[in-house]
Structures are given as C-alpha cells and as structure tokens.
Image 1 (cartoon, helix red, strand yellow):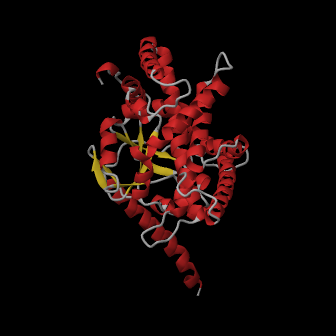
Image 2 (cartoon, helix red, strand yellow):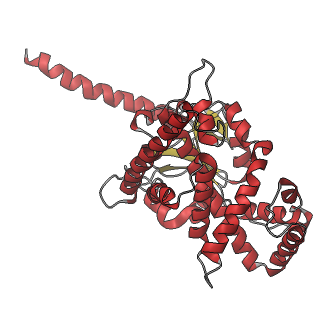
Image 3 (tube, rainbow, N blue to C red):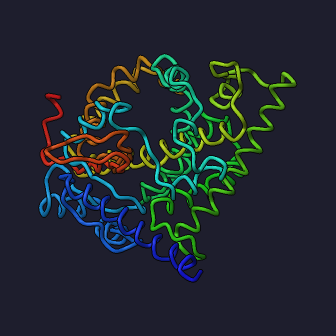
Length: 392
C-alpha cells in the first residue's frame, strides 16, 4: 500500500527529468546562434538597459557573431539579427518564416486583459486592405494643410518665445497632438493631456524590466495603460453615439472609419478592438516620428552647409505662397533636397531601435538554426558610413 503512494512521487520527477534530458539533447544537436541568456529570470535586461542598444549589440557582435547572436530579453529566448543582411532576411520572410510578435509584458501594458494571450493578428482585427487605404499617398495628401497649420501653431507657442528649447520633448508633444487630431479629431488641450500624461508612462516603461511592483517603470506603464484604455473607450462610445444620431460626418477621421468598417462576415469591430488598434498606431507613430524629427534637427545643427541648403529650398517654396497660404502636396514634391536630408538622417540614426518577430517554423540563417518558437529581434545599428546626400 505504501508503495502505491510512493510510486507517483518517484515516477513523476523521473519522467520530468527524462523529458528535460531529451529536450536538452535535441536542442544541443542544433547549431543555434552563440550567446548567453544572462541571469535566471532577469536575462540580459539590466545589461541591455545600462549599456544601451548600440553598445550592447556591438559588444556581442564582436564576441559572438557579426550576423546573429542569442540573448534573453523581456523574459524570452531571443535571436538578435544584425546589419543590412539581417534587415533583408527578416522583411523578405515576413509571414513566411516569421510572424509579428509583441512581448507579453508589452501586451499587458497596452492591451485589454482579454487580448493579452491572443496573437497580434487576432488583436488587430483590421484587414490589410483597410490599412492600405488609410495610409496610401492619396489618402495622406488631404492631411498636409492641417499638419502645416498645427506645425506653425506649435512653433509659435512652444518654440518662438524661448531662446533655447529641448527638442525631443517638444517633438513628442507635437507628434502626439497631431496623432490625436488625425486619428480622433481631438483638439481640446485638456482632453489631449488626459491621454498624453498616462500614455507617456506607458511608452517610458513598457520596454523596462517587467517587474510589476510599486515604483517601477513597468508598474507605471501598467497603470498608464489602464487609464489610456479607459479614456479611449469613452471617446469611442461618444463617437459611436454621434454616428447613430447622424451628428457625425462619416469618414472624417480614422476612428469614424474604424467604427464603420466590417470584416468578411459583415461584422463590425468591437470597442475594445478599435481601442487596441488606435493604441497600436499611437505607439507606432509617437516615439519613432518624434525621434526622427529630433535627429534631423540635430544633424542640421551640426552641419551648417546642409542647413543652409535646406533653408534655401524651403524659402524658395515659401516665397511662392501667399502670406497665410498652407502647404500642399505639390509643395512637398518640390522638397527634393530636404527629403534626401531626412532619408539620410533616418539611415544614420534609425528611429525604431528594433522590431520583434517569432519563428513560425525552424529555419537556418548565417549557418545557425533558429528553432520554431524562438523570438527574433532586429536591432538597428547606426550607419557606419555617411554617403553624399547630393548624389542620393
């Protein structure tokens, strides 16, 4: 009788040990990328935060492999792809070998709890054709006068009165205001602040070490995310009511279009799905756009001859306009040198430090095997060489 009770206690640990052994042996047969997983539970999160992306990647490229190495970030075993070839491989194999992925910690900060376990495809609920329609040049042209008007007002109130300004915070303020206006037609500064303050908590903490304890950056991101989602639901419900009462012009902004779009079965998106999509678009546009603007201005300040050439081109366009006439798509087309400068700045200092993917199947890259289920991250390093933008 005693043996009957003891048997499961012996068999269970033995079975688990055998499973671990064979899995380890199978994994050991694979030539996975070289690297280290860092400390248990913490991984290399702290090292990454202290060193910064640039130093972190360069050190491991030198130590392990200049093409791909393994690490552990945000609680996940991860292969980090480096350089232009890594860029090309990831983006040419999108939805073939790799699928989009967000860290669990990031989804907890951004999404409703009901969606945290879902795939990104299930979370978005948007058809690719819908995104194409709202982002194609023909659709974006109509926003240029509004963007110009908001930029002028922003410079007048936030820049002109001061002898010196901090560019990055002001760029983020302008970018967020623009996104709120284009996505949801929000113009009231107080209303915007109710979204901007908690949203800043989210973006500041969602990539930090995922420890949800009072006082941590990640805890701030969790709290900020709850406030942002609550505020967005209010906005969505108010707009839905306006549409039902015919008080809203259909298609005036992204929110109205989301409320009216249907899937293949004729079903409308839920309020939570719309909120998830707006949050995703805010995150995608907020940091990257403001970072890009900041670095363009940094490079112009450091290179006076480039600044002079950009200023000359902009003044020629300004002279062709009336005193209060706003920019048009045709004016943007004339900014060829300015566009080259912006592209070169993006190449030199990519605003998005990395993209997350998940291996949908086992594949080989640079002689190493990436097992199915491994997370993959592309970390953009600043360009090594600067080319002549006049010849670009």
